Image (cartoon, rainbow, N blue to C red; front, top):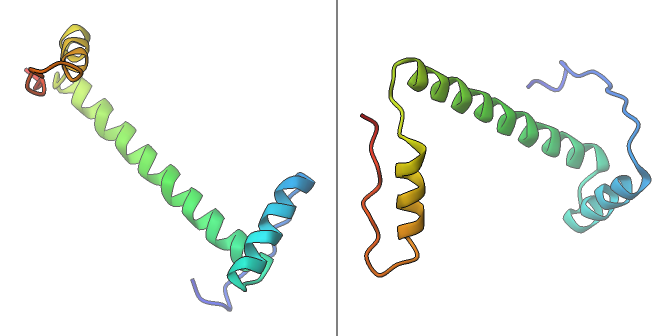
Length: 91
């Protein structure tokens, strides 16, 4: 994002969270604004990835690429044994 394309964003933030932001900014020798921009960018990227994965999973369900819950549970249970089962595959 270009520096000239910026806007002010105002939010009510709990004091304890502001204190943590300030501590992080001091530790990193950065401004509070820099820390907030980094955190907001990371959160948006995480939410975009979550949305992409949900859409991908729903497309798999729509296409019938699913694994029965009992098979997944049996596989997960087997991981704590001496003979774990192979990872179940969609049918």
